[in-house]
Picture 1: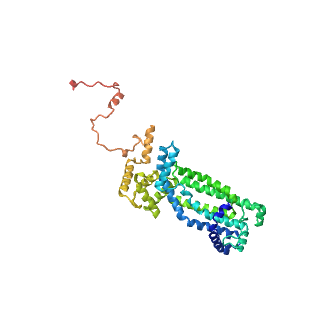
Picture 2: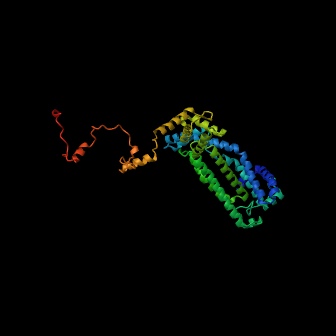
Picture 3: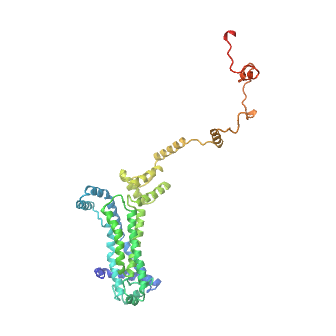
Length: 417
């Protein structure tokens, strides 16, 4: 590690100068010999470097998106040459060259900040060896050796001997406990960052070498940091843990607000965007308009989540425009109103409680609450008066009761009339 760090000694002076400038600021607040002053100086160095690397991070995102758009072509090549691995690799490299993409683009931020990482390692290793380096003179060297982070010296390592740790005014137990915790946190943060990318922001429906590469990095990088972390000084562990946390937060922001098409993150984003647009009737930012514009431009090539988003807008009486804006669609609103009216017409009228109870009683064979014989006199309908010679119904039954022969009577002969 010392040999590798010496290769980047040309930027040791700029890195040490930045740390000293931050130390002046934090030393005025926390004291020049405290671990807070030196630890926060290293954290600020990380933040400054990562801000400078934002353009490179944006380039990494664009390259990753380009790889995503090539996945259908990659799948065709895999199916065409599934029995010829060599030809398959040749066609993949040809596709990368024609489109100008690079499958190793996801490693660009790590490679770009490696010189600063090794330069910081060289600075802290010189402090532990009681050697001046860069702009750190004897006075700053003594102050840095007194600085402790949670009881562990800034320049101490997990593999240091007890004599070396005692020379830095600390104990071997404190150093190993602090470094072990920081190594575990560093590895876990690296694993979670890569896993977040794989599970949320990658279209997993297509298996490509790019997917295999990302999956390999998800497991390889945490192991590498865990193995080499025991040889890192505490200050370097602070540096790398801080950069992992920064990367994780930066990636969470990108995944939430600018997800990869076809990923689970895009499904969640379009669902949130659909609710907001349906509620307010418009897009609220330039980024949202850019995403809506891209979805409209795809036409029939939209994926499942994008089609669901467009259909949701149509159901809400809205229409996405080619410039990314959203307007109210009169035809869609009229169709929606017609569907609602048709549904209301098809719905049967709700019966009153008395009718429902009456119908239930009839179905059960029970008498209703008010029979004909129990009707009041004033409730009976008034009809015309019956004639005297009118034979009431049931007259045969009356004659039978007065002594006449029972049974049906023979009709009179017409001749006797």
